[in-house]
Image (tube, rainbow, N blue to C red):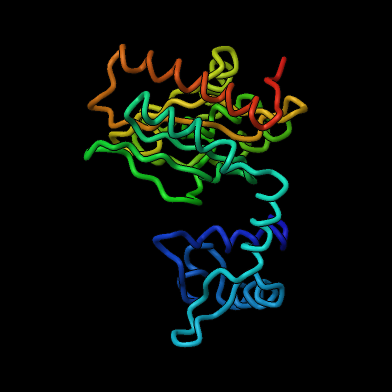
Length: 251
């Protein structure tokens, strides 16, 4: 990783459930030493990406990400265009639907439509999803540029559950299948008892930029529900692609 990559990677540690973190915690979670972590935090702080809580001295996100998010939303209004389709997908399947965008070597969860059921799959806004073991990641990676796929396959693939595919050749087979079918399935490969089905979303040049998915407790997955969700997810992905001014890849 470059120095910039390493510094920006610290920002990915902050989530809704971890809005603040101390120097030692950030260093441990990022795998850096404290001196390096402090140097990155100073640089990020100078640009407004992080700040310290005056009372606790713990670090949190600064105002810069908010400003950039507003610029992004003003020029690429994802929420207004995607949320109606996402909510409709949730209503049709009665399961948690979510939309994510590819960012670096992961998928960033942008919008979530939670299932109305008591027993449901829960996600966090901004949650980072691995590419190799989630339905969203596989659906996007199946249509990603070849250099990106090669880079992912060349790195060690972390095993999240007993079902995670960590062999590059087996993962390539999954990508080939997802590319042929137009959707991806991840059965307990990221989290036990969670089944995911996802389809890619494309921009105006035909480049895959993200994915829309439905996450379901495995106890409710049957052949019938799987078929229903697959059709609904593919239609929703096509609708969102159209709403964003995109077109499906011909590759």
